[in-house]
Length: 330
Image 1 (tube, one colour):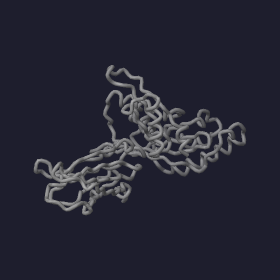
Image 2: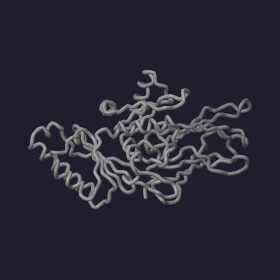
Image 3: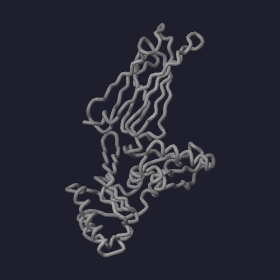
Image 4: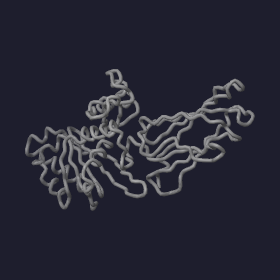
């Protein structure tokens, strides 16, 4: 599966008019953004001479979002759908735009079991079978939903003469657009945005972006505040943080998780540090490191750093995980 994911990657270098001190960026779009696969792709590009800070790895789902948001806004003022058909590959994508106080788009994709070999399209009977499969899928996923637009992508839709029933179904009172290379175009759009330092108008929530704001409760200049460690819409692939703190009459760290996918109160969690040695107040410095294991799991590691020359470190570490899927469930 990992080899397949790499083989399906779409890589685009941004060719943009930017100052000489800036660099071109390489954006890689993968079907399944697994941690190990992402690291392998990054390593390969670095060995090829690409600077690490100029590499971005996104999913096909995120590429789809960048592509759609680059179009006329009339094409995404409601629900947007996309069917992708390639050899032994059939996916349905859906994007919903929210225009509240914090504008965001929610994007998801679903692999369909009805995928087939495109060789069957070489015969009339095979084309009829493919048309029946696609029509059945469209009836199931579209239902009575209202769409701004539906996109078709992949080699299987370069010619749609074989699937007249499917086309009649999805074109009924809907705008349908065909673009075989949506993922490559979406990656290029994102590369240019990054190279030109353009802010994103919408926070993108998908399988390569974080769905929640995560902060810790700290005291700065005698004022209690929430210190952000993760912001919703950040790429979990590149989100790693290190924060050093001094424990002030407490043996715990309080976290607050604000999911953008729900309206309920924030989820509050407490990480106990009672395994660390007991010392006088304000004589224990800790280093907190955070990294995502996948889209939903944030791993938090807290290490006892002692207190300079006065108190040596015990070397103890405590590791816990925060599951964002729990914060987004209703």
